[in-house]
Structures are given as structure tokens and as C-alpha cells.
Amino acid sequence: MAKALTNTDLQLPGIKNLYHGKVRDVYTLEGDLLAMVVTDRISAFDVILPEGIPYKGEILNRIAAKNLDATADIVQNWKIDTPDPMVTIGHKCTPFKVEMVIRGYITGSAWRTYSSGQHTICGITLPEGLKENQKFDRPIITPTTKADEGHDEDISREEIIASGLVSKEDYEELERITYALFERGTELAEKHGLILVDTKYEFGKKDGKIYLIDEIHTPDSSRYFYKDSYQELFEKEEPQRQLSKEFVRKWLIEHGFQGKEGQQIPEMTPEYCDSVTDRYIELYEHLTGESFEKHPTEDIHSRIEKNLTQWLKARK
Image 1 (spheres, rainbow, N blue to C red):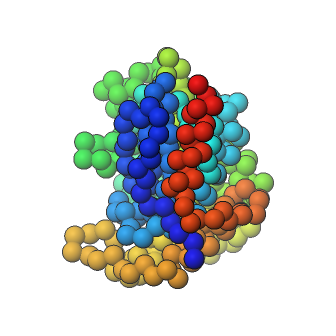
Image 2: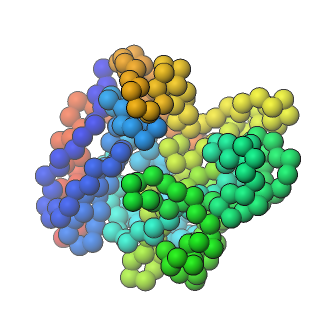
């Protein structure tokens, strides 16, 4: 049975810092480098679930790497290389304190806000009479900022500039890049019979230049609909077929868990974890048009350590 990598403690030359995120372990290395290990941890409702999902980390890392390469003509990005299927090495940048969320359709949290009667989102007034999952005339950017306690908070363009979170000049450039990336992501999705519904981008600066950082267009940071069934389901006002990790959230809700106090995470059996792996493989194959080959999972930690050490030695 395949094993999941849920924690890393790599012994690498020149480590300056190690940060464990919800899904990623980020190693700061000498020479202004970051090594980002995408583990098999899975989170939902801001909670890390107790079991890992075999191959999930590799799938997300490979999708992100492909999309970083496919958009490098629009904006330079942090990626230098992927020395292991679960690892990207890249430039250490100073992150902007906002995430650029862009939406081509009204769904998810934007729909929940709109349907509650609040028709202004992040300073943008939306037209009356929209239906769930309807396409906007033009995509809208609904930025978020990281609050002190770590939750994303909606913020308007005007508030970002007025507060000095991002300069006017930089923010206008982030907007331009965000629209261009979303347009490219939409084109790439269409080739595989998908609609890029919404996504988020993170940016940083290095030597005065703007870089795209973190992941891009993965099922964890983006929402996709199936193109062939979109119109019919929209007209019937039925839920869209989605390509995202929504199926995990749905399973948790059905088993009485939404991350609230006093709720218990349901048991994640090996059979259930394998079924989630199968869904992630399906996501990978839909998004890339390629079949996914499984690597041995017996000793992933040693493999990563070896591949990264060799890469760092060769770079010197």
C-alpha cells in the first residue's frame, strides 16, 4: 500500500530556517533560496486532517511547476528547478501582504455574500439579478489580506492603496498581471474541457522586481467546472461538476465536521485515503492531459533529502 509523507525534517547543507505550513514545509537556504516540499498533508476548514493522502503532494507540485512554466512569459516567477517530484526550489522573495483572488464566475463565498443581500464585495458593486455560478461580464479581483490571527480578510483596492499595504504603482501592476494570468489559465483549462472559475495568486518582490510565488492553478488554489455540462446545469440551477478539493469538504460535512469547536474529525480509513488519492490523480490527468505514473513511496523522505543534497552540491 502507498505511504504518505506527512512531515519532513531534512538534513540539508545551508539550512537557515524551516517553516511548517498547513501543507508545505519551506526550507530557507543559503544564497536566498527556498526549498518548498509539498507534503501529502491535507487540510480543510483551516484544520490539518490526521491522515495524509499518498501522491497528493507530488500531484500538486507537478501541476504548479507546469503552470509556472506555462506563464513565465507573463511574469517572472520564483521557480528555479524541481529536483524532486515533491519539491520546488526557487528564489526567496519578500511577499506582498495581499493575495490576489480573481473570479470569473459568482460562486462559493462570493455567492454566499451576494445571496445574503450584500451586493458589494471588496469595494466592487455587483449588478442585480445574478444567479449562482453565472459568468461575470469581466473577471473581478477580490483581494484578501492576512489578518494577525492568520485568517484571510476581504479588502478593497482603495483600502490596500490608502493603507500603504501595497503602493499604487505596484498594485496596478499586480492587477495587470493577475488579469493576464487568469486569461492564460482560462485558455489552458479550455484545452482540457474545463472552465477556470476562480483562483488566487501570490506575489513577492526581489531586487525591486515583482515575482509570482507559491503555487498556481492547482486544484487546491483554484476551482474548475467541466465545460461540457456547465450551460445545462446553470440553466437548470443545479450544482456544477467541479474539479477541486470540494469533494473532501463535502465528505467531512456529511460526517458532521466543519472545523467547529467540539466537532470530531471522522475516521479516515486507508480505503478512504486511497479513494482521495484516486480523485487527485483524476484531477492531475484532467488538468494536464497526461497519465500519472506512481513512484515507489517506501522511503520518500530519504529520496527527497538525496535529490536536494545532490542539486545543491551541483549548484556550488
